[in-house]
Image (cartoon, rainbow, N blue to C red; front, side, top):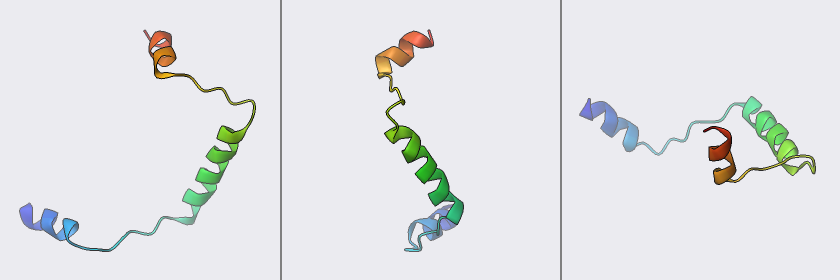
Length: 50
């Protein structure tokens, strides 16, 4: 197990993200930037789910 972990930790290879990741992130950013989007504080979320 240690040998496997060492091989994973010491390689400088970064995995490539698939193209669809960029599409999903762009869609989420568009939603976040929308004036209709409402954000809640942590306290509001806690109250909502108690």
